[in-house]
Image (cartoon, rainbow, N blue to C red; front, side, top):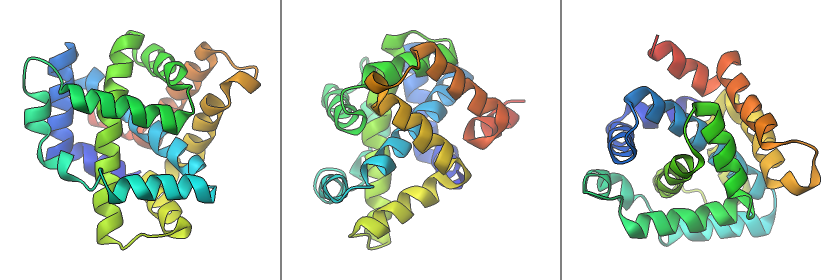
Length: 209
């Protein structure tokens, strides 16, 4: 969890929060908590995917090519104009499709319901968050010489920290949505409950009083 809090509390996170809030008309608290719902869920889904060699190869290949971390240095320009950068949104949509296996709309519905925002805003938040997460991972992978499945799992687990098992479980319920009995409301409830019981959402709740 500390890795995610470090990201959100750092200069990149502040640019991300301010930019998303400004672009989507959300106050700082809502933008922060929505991002704090989306980012760990994306990371949890990635860790599920990294349980296979093919999944690991796909993630490491993306980190080594397009997602080496440069996006973190350009968040002000990406989010500071009249619209969010179209290439970033397209890239984010592609990442979400791979990560959630076509279930990204259900992820957005659940995040939206749990944070009191509509599905479209939640999807936009996820589309922005996904390339940022990949850039953050890319920088970490490079600095830690991550090149195999064990290294990637260790990196993802370290960033998620105490939230690791919870986020992987919630992500798996979304990834396997067609094969379980849960509704989107059930998923939203799990995300909301996670905020009450601790983890990153609980920590952010304390920050906001």
